[in-house]
Structures are given as structure tokens and as C-alpha cells.
Image (cartoon, rainbow, N blue to C red; front, side):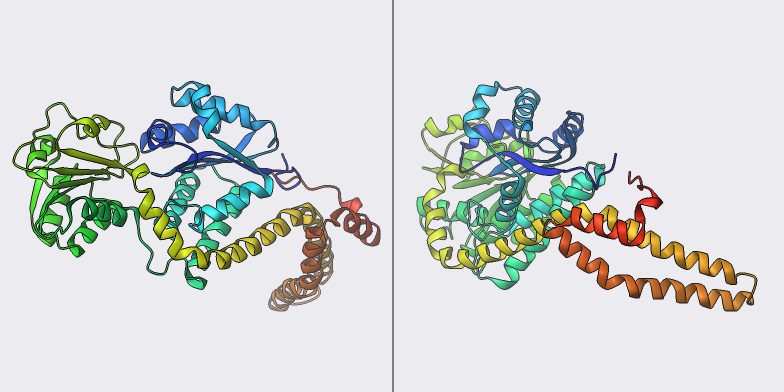
Length: 428
């Protein structure tokens, strides 16, 4: 199959904080083994040649390269619902599906953080990069999505370097701490627990410390990591299986661990000694049993409850969005130009091969007429000369192809150089 000549397109099927609740996002997310299994299963679907799954606390998106963008939506929805063991009717009203340039624009908006719950947050760039690298390492990418995601990551970096979208930006972890401050007031005397000490957990700890917290309880699957945080910030390292027993001792608990089941449950949880315990669950899937919301003495908040702080954040940063959109529009134009230039790649290869063949034939004539050391010099000269003489015409061919004139160029050059005599090259 010629990957250059086929008309591959990008599509994206997804849900996000804009389209559905955290409860549904929990059920449709991918993490750990399920991500590997999901990608492996996804690539077996007819019509899909490449795939990337982006799964974060606020969005789950499936990107694919396909020859059949218009007809793939139903196939993807059926697969996703079946893989996550839910009925399709639960997914269809809340998902979005973009094709062609709209799909590219969506990815560029995501990586630029203007589609994030927290406008300007920095984590999404790393999350997109990790999703891309995971698929790449697992062998689920080829030239098309490779180029798209590399261009998206480059754009994300450029946005942060050239605009003020991330100036004084906040994270979801920061908003979680602000939620605790709103509920409890001054946190300097609060006893705070953090469950899950990855990137998000570390941000939560850092923000709690900045808010004055000095009495920490650290919970993590790897107990050594809890001990490291206790040594750095003070407080106690507590085994993960004791989190329910410790609830009665805490003023607040922020959870952000990766888990397919609840780590903090109503059943078996103790509550004594503290008039109010604020629980903020910023994990996806959620770490806390939603039943805490109706239990006296607990105030439970999830990602969906941080809307007021999110709105304030957006108001502070909306002036920077126009500059980001300009960069996105420019990157989209570049991608479209690249996409259309693919039509002339076979012609470029044939044109290059024609000139290389002429050089090879000339060298063959001189092979027995000059000493070996002279022939080596001639071979180097031939390669350099060929590269120099082809540079400008090949650059112009790419531009012409990007302008949609690839067929006209092909017909003209084949007549001028008798390229059709060389036959078509098979690009696997």
C-alpha cells in the first residue's frame, strides 16, 4: 500500500468537561493496562491505520488516521462503548466527532490549553506528549499522526513562549486547594491529607504548603514515596490501606491517584474529632465514593464543582486567547499545506531518482578511466552537485503541491523528463 498516495485523514471522537459529567468520564477513561489494551483493540478496527488515545481527568479523546473519515464515527462509538462496557445510548449524546481540518484544529486548541478546564494550564502539553509517545513506542503510529502530533507539541511550546496564556496560570491542584480554603478559611492550622503523589499530587502538596499547611498525611501506593514527602514537607507517611481509618483526623483530603476503583469508601471510614472534613477528588476515575456527599461531617467536591474558580481564571486570561488563536490558525495553515504537498511526494522521488541515475551513469563511464581516489572525489562531487541543483525545484514542487497543482506538475515534468519511462515506485 502506498501511504503517500492514499488520502489519509485525521478524525477525533471524544468527551470532555464541556460535554459530560465526571461520572461518565470515569467510566470511559483509559489508564495503565486498559490504555495498552484499548490501543491494541482499536488498531484492529477496519479503516484505522494509526491511533492515539488521550485520557486525562478532563477529557478522553480518540485520534485516528483513516481513509474513511465520514463513516468511521459509528464504528468508533460502537467500539468505545463495547470496550468500556456501557450502552451506546449513554455515550452518543455527550461525545463530539471532528474530521479533517476540524480535527486538527481541535488538537491544536487542546494542546494550547484554550480548551482546558483551567485556561492556560501547563499539564495538558505534557499529557498530549505522553499520549503521543506511548502510541509511538507501542507501534501504533505512522507518518501521518506522527507529523500531526509533533506539530501540535511544537505549537504548544510556541504558545507558552510567545503568549501570556500561561502567565500566572493555575492548575487543577491549585483550584482544589482554593476550594479547601473557601470551605475552611485559614489553612495554617489544618491537618491535610494528600492521596496520590504523582505530578498532580506534588502540585497539591506544594500549593497546600504555600497556603500555610504544615501538618500533612501522605498516602501513596509506594510507601517510600510517602516517606520522601513527609521528610520534605513534614507530617506523616501513612499506608494507603489506612486512609479510611485516618479520615476522622483530617480537616481536608485531596485525592489524585490513578485507580480503577474507589480508594476512599464510606464503608469503614471513621469520622470523629473534626467538625468538618473537606474532600476534594480531582482524580479520573474518581478516588472517592460519591456517597460522601450525603454523609454528615463531610463536604465532597469533584472536578465538576470547581466551576466558579474556573470562570474567574478564564476572565483573567481571556485577553491572551486571541494571540493563541492566531498561532493556532497559522499552524493549521502549515499543516494543510503539508497535507496537500503529499500529493507530489511520489513525483519528487521520481524526479530525484532521474537525476541520481544520470550521475550514476556518468560515474560508471569514468570508473576505469581514473584512479580509485579520484573516483571517490567524483562520487562525492556528484552527490553534492545533485543535492544543490535539486534543492530549489523540489522546494517549489512542494509549494505547488500545497497549492493543489500536483497533477499539473506531474504531467508537465513527466513529459519534459520522460519520467514515465522509469515506472512508478512502490512506497510501502
